[in-house]
Image: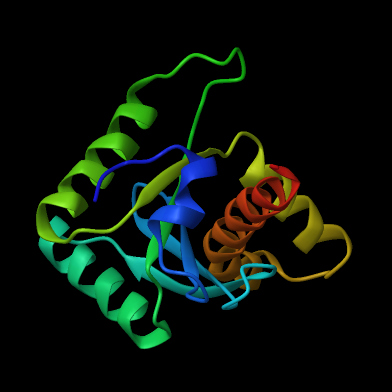
Amino acid sequence: MAVVDLQDLPGAAPANTPLVGLDLGEKTIGVAVSDRGRMIASPLALIRRARFAKDAEALFALMESRGAAGMVVGLPVNMDGSEGPRCQSARAFARNLLRLRELPIAFWDERLSTAAVNRLLTGEADLSRARRAALVDKAAAAWILQGALDRLRRTP
């Protein structure tokens, strides 16, 4: 497989299989998973970044445990819509994954996802700073994946 446009992801990944969403940070990778019907995204795990091979192994193990067949990677686009070094890093991560395994990967603009999740966890959930830090990356991955799932349902 390859990197696909978001609207092509449902046809590229087998029906009735979950998708995973990733929030790529410098120190961690937040991972979320959808249900088989691809309606709801839920936070799944936090991978502490090490070497790429080890990160990919952990990610693929999570995907296999859930039967996931496709991926949505958050693309940290600048506020003006331009792509900087962080976008290049996310694209390189996806390309490197594709060298190890064939799977459809789509990107989703993740602007303000972490800020939105922090606001939610601070205000509504009233979590401590330490507890919030432990949840924010995987919650941001769920935010990214849910945005992509919502768009897919609205696409004719």
